[in-house]
Image (cartoon, helix red, strand yellow):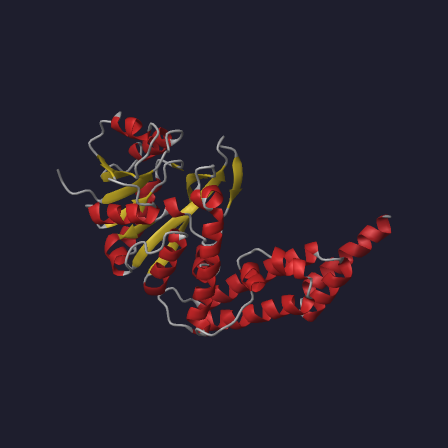
Length: 338
């Protein structure tokens, strides 16, 4: 049998509810020359039984001798993969039929790209739409400094590049760490097309089961990422880091306009450092645009949650005259209607 052109890594741990749907979505791909590595991390439910019910020759089933956790399980999968290209998949998600074909075609046409993701539909357990994060591909590099912008099961990457960065190296927020390390040394990209459904469920480690651990790990990673550009002694408060992670609540609770303005000023300095740092993904114009939208998003979050007078003062201090005009105009219209 010829070597597969793509290896799909699908880790499994007590995933009986949606596992068959996830496996079927891979086996029914329009691109067929792949191997599907099902990596069972000592499940205690019917996961093994479901896997053994399949007879497709492309499936390779491995069960860990003891529970190893997601990072060690995926590293085992990388070492077992027979293809130089590796796709990720999770046991509760659904890949659209053309996903692997389209991602493989992009990577073959762009040999300098080492990591590729795609847009997803975020859905509930029942399959209802939650949101679609259809961000522009050119904004991913900048925003990966502050947040995990890629969905883990949506990625395809080059095995050799993953081995060069050491694979998965942390127990929590392992995907964010992997993407960050890829983006430091290799070209990364997002395919601007919805190619999978990403399900939020009680089995989601980062959403439910290990949320405090993942939140802490991501907070620490963001500080590390910023210091990569700004130096190891660069200081940010907990609230400011959270704000840059799209969580303005701690800064709003402190209620200090000075700290809010200072956070925006620090964002501008960090952006300049990112823009100037050599990197295979560096595009100064795209970085500036991504930073503009990030700043605007933060200011709108502040303005919507602050009392009117404080919102006006914040926008004035930040010299955001367009947003200030909109805020005052909206306030006057509401008053005239009373």
